[in-house]
Length: 348
Image (cartoon, rainbow, N blue to C red; front, side, top):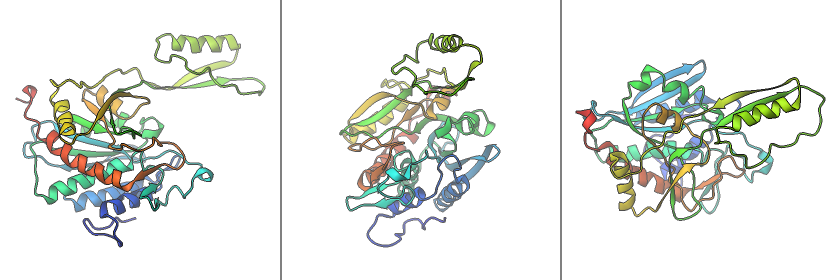
């Protein structure tokens, strides 16, 4: 699916950025068989039209990370990384008012589609903010990289986790990263400086089938004794009961939100200027930011969606077009500030 030419509407009075967003939502990147090729082709076409350099890194068979780059005037400085993932979670279409991959817009301007909040909105907001800045003739000292990664929704093991280990990632010379956050139903904007450490566990129990009871709710998974408890449960169940970790993240890196952190100072300063009320939080789940932080780079999770119900992974996921457009304006203010952070002591 080829995107529209930059800056041109495809009909009606719809903002071209909204049209592009809806085109991206119609690319079916749902698990278990996401159409990654179509997504990469779509995004690469946009990047080329914007004059960004393109690099495709195959981290493993069938899993490609697309890197779009806007070169800074001082490439020796550490760069700004804008990360987003291209995959989306499965849907149960019988619970949706509109087909989840048609990006229907209702009379209120709400756009219904899987990925509307998580997180195809952010991908297009990055690109459209850069479009505006380039159209204004802007340029900045620091290079801006955009990465579009696969498999975040299934743990990122064949996506960002592998990418941060590769020389192509190290060559990006990342100083600070932005990644996804969450919608906020209030006036505030949620900003995430860390996240929980996910443990995905597969328990295998051999025996006659019976009623499948749920695990006890509200267990303290963050406690060091939790794995011992699982092992004890399996021992108590008798012979033939084993367990294995599908994901065991022990990283506890967080990003400083002190004014002494120049990255946070730039980010929060723009938010103050725009009169955005921020709510600082630990992400309730886990995103690719954990791999970026573990590689030694500060990262903030931020999706500029306030006054919006939290519907990621839920039925009838939607985002209002005005909230989406406001997000582009916010990024168009954030990127100049971040890409203009003065040289740090470590940068000579």
